[in-house]
Length: 67
Image 1 (cartoon, rainbow, N blue to C red):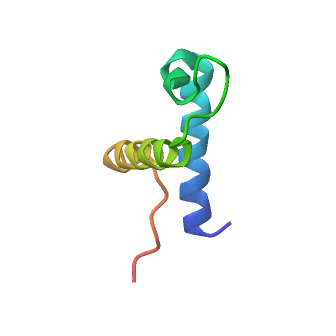
Image 2: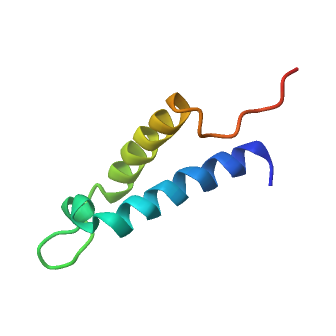
């Protein structure tokens, strides 16, 4: 995998870990009937960016090789 793919995998792995630990944290993106809310994609992007920032600040994301 290239660095971009490694970074995405790390973010999705963190997402899965957090979901396994606390699925209720994600309940707001599903309505009371179990249907995906209208802005599901936007919610995912926001959460993905939040995780990316957190992991980057903790130096847990792969970085491109130095030039």
